Length: 147
Image (cartoon, rainbow, N blue to C red; front, top):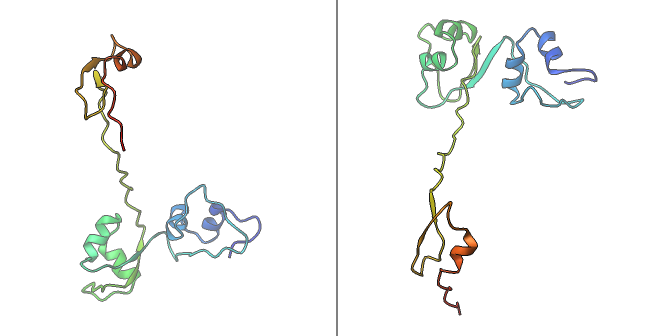
């Protein structure tokens, strides 16, 4: 439980785990603020906590989190075959979280000209540099009234 004066790094040091392990286990960032009385998950070693999903394999988990099947098997007291089941909770010793892939929308190219009239009316393409929007609007037919 967080006490007055505790910081993320002091808690990690106190429990001999990496700061990243503390952050990952508690879904925190390095800029997260702690509150007195807040409960934190403290893993027994540096690494990652993992909830086994349908279709997971020990080698796949080890690869994803940059660990080894041997470390996971030994630390979690798994059978020699390394059987894991959906719903199992594993500690991945010395594991690291994979980088988060952030989707960036494609850049919209700048147009060299613009359409300056309503879709229902005939349109003219106005070059970007030679005509202003106000000047172009004088040549654009008015929109029909909506009832």
